[in-house]
Amino acid sequence: MKLNQQNLNRLAAEVQLPAYRLSDTRHGIAHIGVGGFHRAHQAYYTDALMNSGEALDWAICGVGLRTEDRRARDDLKEQDYLFTLFELGDSDDTEVRVIGAIRDMLLAEDGAQALIDKLADPQIRIVSLTITEGGYCIDDSNGEFMAHLPQIQHDLAHSEAPKTVFGFLCAALEKRRAAGIPAFTVMSCDNLPHNGAVTRKALLAFASLRNSDLCNWIDANVSFPNAMVDRITPMTSTAHRLQLADKHGVDDAWPVVCEPFVQWVLEDKFVNGRPAWEKVGVQFTDDVSPYEEMKIKLLNGSHLALTYLGFLKGYRFVHETMNDPLFVRYMRAYMDLDVTPQLAPVPGIDLSDYKDTLVARFSNQAIADQLERVCSDGSSKFPKFTIPTINRLIADGRETRRAALVVAAWALYLKGVDENGDTYTIPDPRAAFCQGLVVDDELITERLLGVEEIFGAAIPKSAEFVAAFEWCYNSLRDEGVTRTLERVLA
Figure (cartoon, rainbow, N blue to C red):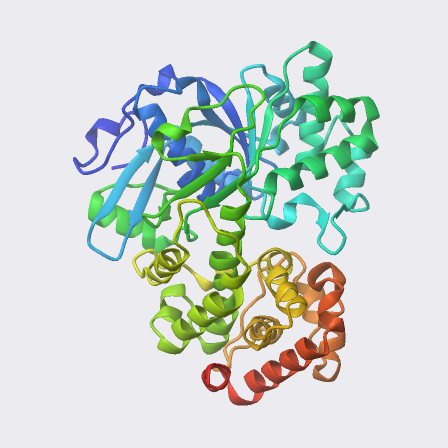
């Protein structure tokens, strides 16, 4: 049965439907970057609240700034913006639920002014973001906004026809200020430390270059809550679509597949109202930092620790690495010995239980989470997920070999050939630059570790870490993944 509004009540009985009338909803949120994670997380929570009869004025208008967003918009539009949440666990229990929280989607390509007008509409009280770790244009080596980037220079020169998130946000906020319309909250839902503070820094830096009065108004009137977000959401595959159709009779052009686990810890800093998400499981707090550091260093850091090694070994799914006892031992050693001693106590969380949960989640073969997804954009992920752990290990004079193995695996992965001789492309916006760093094994340490915006200043100056990196790299190249893991864990 094709998913659309007309066919909703003709779907199989096990498919959960929106408990609200779609025609009763009104936009309150504009979300920039509609992908799998947003639909499995923020849209999921918003839909759950709407199902209770609340928050019907907080429906989501999606926003696409990239050319590749057109296909996503077209697929959703064909389905009246409905999509299926296909929740898969390792047991036979699955949840199939139609989400109706997204009610429209606008594309920058179809007209910048229409998009600016939408963001300036008084009904829009939150603008949320999933624009990837690299989308904030912050140089990780010094924390500064990269104003020199061509797309940023374009938006500063053409404020009426922006291309970046910062250009659109500033254009909309300028229009609201001129019309006396209250500002909206800008809420990052991306996986990066202090995501609200990073968003604030980037937007104010851009605004200061455009108009100092606007910058001051944004500083005084816009809030940027920090958040910790978590749900493993693989790329939707053809196999997932066929599984949904065969088992549940739903023909959905773009379902979202996810694990059962979901978490959202959010600062309660909203200048223009918000949905009562706490009624559907969102945890509001005054300080997200402990939760954020726990999740980024343990979950995202462990993901990177596994993913490049797994890819080099020839695995292509996360659960395949977890079926290999050596990988599980390495992951536990990395979490227990390298990361956990760095973490502050996390209110309401037992770290031992949390790590056990991560092992179980990574082992979930039902969602078939692709290593390629986790491998992607490594040049932006390393500074946020792994480098802070390494820097602390160096500062504390602790063993660095397990952490150095993560970097060495990435270096060898960048060569584009696994140990079985299979070739692959590197999914990273800076792929050509990164691959250029590893073309010569003789100079690889100096070239790779010397990239300050990725590795910072301390790592290449640490003789102990450099030696550990070179040992790991040579071992991976000459002995392979399995033997290297055995030696590291011995």
